[in-house]
Structure formats: C-alpha cells, structure tokens
Image 1 (spheres, rainbow over the protein chains, first blue to last red):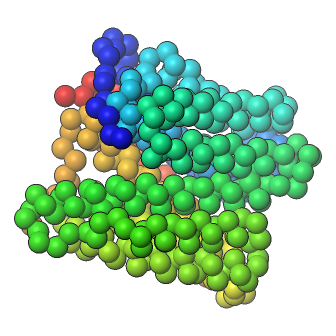
Image 2: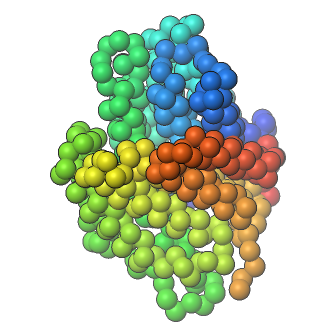
Image 3: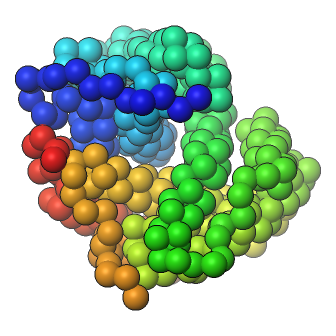
Length: 339
Length: 55
C-alpha cells in the first residue's frame, strides 16, 4: 500500500519538522567527530573514558551511532510516504534525537558513568525507534515494509551483544558487530533494490531512453535470499569455508543484479551513479569477506569489512542523504545537466 | 560530485591499506582524513537546508 503523506502544520524549529533533518545532521556530524577521535586514538594522541576497547568503540559508533542515525532519518521520512500517516515531528522527534545524542555521549564515557547505564541509554534509542516504526507499519497496515521493524529489532540484539562483552557478561562483541554489519548490508540490498532501479527508470524515462532497468522479479528475490543466507552463515561462523563460499556466491549474484539496473546509463548524473556505486561496494564487500574466510592469508579480514562499511554503508548513506535532503527541501537534486 | 569522488577515494584507500604493510598506517590515516573531509563538506553544503523550511 502506498499512502498519501499528510503533514500537519508545524510552527517549531524546522530542524524537527521531519525525521531526516536531525538524524542526517547527527549522522554527518558524528561521521566527522567519531572518525577524528578514532584517528587521534590510533596515533596515540587521545583516549576515551570508555569500557570498550578502542577498536570496538570505533566499530560500535560507526554502526550504532553513524549508520543507525542515517537509517533512522531515512525510515522516519519514508514511512509517512508508505503509510499515509502523520510523520514524527516536534517534541517526540526532539526526544528521539536527544536519546540518540545521549547514547553517543554515554558510549564515550561509559567508564565514568558505568557500563550498564551506558548500555541502557544507548539501547533506549533503538528500542524507542523500534516501537515507533512498528506502530506506524501496523497502524498503516503496510505489511510490505514489515521487514523494517524486524531489522531494527535485530539491530537491538546486535547492539546488546556488543554491550555484553565490555560489561564482562559474555564474549559476544565480535558476534554483535557482525550481526549489526550484516543487518545494514541486508537493508541496503532490500532498500537499494527498490530505490536504485526506480530512480534510474524515472531518470531514463524523462530522457526518452529505450533501455530501462530490469523490473523486480524472481532474480532479485533469489539474490536477496542468497545474501541473507551468506550473511547468516558468516554471522554464525565467520571463519567457516561454507560461509565464505556462500558469501562469494551472494556477491556474484549481487553484481549480476546491479548490472540489470543499467547503472552506466546514469554516468552523467552523479546523484544517481553514486547509488549504483554504493551497491557495487556491497557486492565487492560480500566477495572480499567471503574470500577472507576462504583465503585468510591472502585476503586480510579487515579488507572486506571496510569494503562493506566505508564503501557500501558510507557511500550509500551519503548518496541517500544528499538526495533526500535536496528532494525534501525543494532544492534541485540533479547535480549535472543532461548530456 | 566532489563528495562522491572523495568517499570513493576514502573507501579505496581503506580497503587497499591492509595489502600494503609498509603504508598501512599512512593509508588508514589518509582514508580517515578524506572521510572527515567528505562529511564536513556534506554538512557545509547540505546542512543549512536542514534548518530551513523547504519550498
């Protein structure tokens, strides 16, 4: 079901009139701050009063700080379009974005305020987001997008797993990171598979092109199942040969899926080709993570992880945020003239 | 356009860093600095629109 979005008048600050505004701002600012702090830590010039080991803090903040904020902004803006229901705005949006911000502060100071309190504050954001997304999807009877609250629920579990280890409750930090990363890869596969061919088709149609992206069909469904299976095996058993083979197969099918979207025809429109490139990074990342399991000496483990994280999540996040901001604030989203 | 080229450069340098042990740390730093530049530029170019009412 596609609803017609309704917007009630909002007289407060524009920043809290739509979900993407505070969260895309937060994602952008945190991308700068968290990586700046990380580089200083790597150089030995800084340290944080956190119970997380530095590498784990970096991974946690890129997944559950930066990427989660970008996802929240996208989801809160897209849901009113899907359901026709009122968007979250004003005081509830201020509270939600404030809880996200508190989570960043709590994670950076967990050695001072206590690991369990920090975990509770940080997890509160995803718990509230989950309840909001679930309420909107169910109230709008928008069952097509039911995987979204499921994905947020999985992120809650993943985040909780990362929190258990530094609190001395379980050796589950790496498992939580893999589960979180896998969830974002799957979300990009699902959402990217909807928006990339759709935006490409609209752009090509306006230019009278006779070649269009292949419409969604069983190949796409099959590829998503392969990605889900490969990631599931990798999360459970990252060093296993069968997980490596499954990820390589998923990566190859993801490449084939990308080719069906005719991305090279958008080469004159940066805001479109960057979406195709972001999805290409996901396919490359799946291949590299799979190869790292199969050939651990030749392919270091961080290679595939950063192909997916910096390449896939970073590129796709930037592409979606720039496009959405321009689209929703009345600014031109085309960055280049037609050829 | 600049943002998109820079984020690609950041990703390529971060992914290739582990393959070059002699340049691992410089490449990691380079990737990180480019990443910081990307999102600083993003805030500078699109951030103001988040505070103003759209058309």
